[in-house]
Length: 304
Image (cartoon, rainbow, N blue to C red):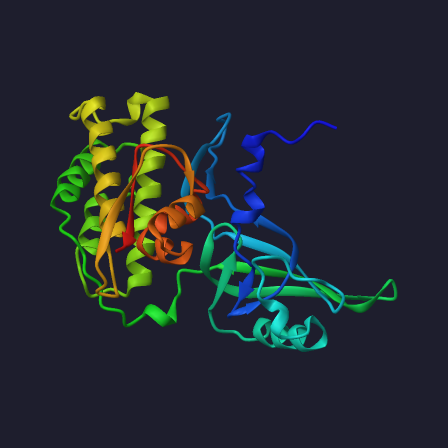
């Protein structure tokens, strides 16, 4: 039987994944499903075929996780749940965590830590499985993060973002509800909680991306008073400015440096290269939470 190619041996994605956790409780899982999408509003008119379809922003991510709480399981190399028997001890602790209504931290094997609310869960006890149970849990992403509500944030200057936002507001015939200048104004204040600041940053970048995609398909969505090239340049400038501000936002006071990505890498690759954990990288670079692969050229902030 032919041996596995060296490229596959060196890129075993499962060896780079983090263990699944909820509220600090780690447990083995069988699968993780992810649901996402855009919040869509459809405007219909009488006697007119088709419809105007608008996106009002990204829906929260919904993760469905199947956890296995069976006493006979053996932990893998990177799993730490062996300190407590999976059944019944660990299962009882996880069930109590699922029944808690407050926002909790869910550690996704690929994305790292996310703030979620526990939704529904279904537990299966079966005569075919006499060593424990299987639980299917649903977590819904939330921007609420009580642990960071009082965190003081240092926000880099956003002068370039203000100029770009003004250009986009003048050019935007796509979505009159967009207010890029207002978003930049909100991002320029230190008075909002960090979780809210990051939420505004993520939503604004998403809105800019939607506008840019729309005008590339239909340039008529750009006001005649602003050129298409100027609008595209402003969209890129605003995205870069906000992304850099988000990457440089630091609540710990710890010194940071920048790592330049020169080839395709995973988050785990970069963490190993700079001797940070993936959680630390996601704290400094929240945009990486939705980017399993980081392509060159890119810059990633890390703790020195």
